[in-house]
Length: 104
Image (cartoon, rainbow, N blue to C red):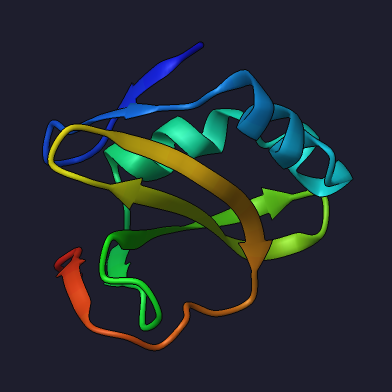
């Protein structure tokens, strides 16, 4: 099971089951490198509007199999643990409280 690190130094688990879920989507199969990159160097981090223990990390990628998209990595956090729920490509970030944003 891979362990990833986010931009704040939080260790995030990526279980084999979640990895299989992510690559089940063909557009993400060639974008696995983006999961770790997005956590480590996001453009924006948003708090989920439905679950305060979930963060959505976004990073723009210009060269994906389906064009210019954002990679969204969804992470569940608790005091003892952090793990990836899913990752996907999207056209825009979900609305919610912005926890962190890159200075442009």
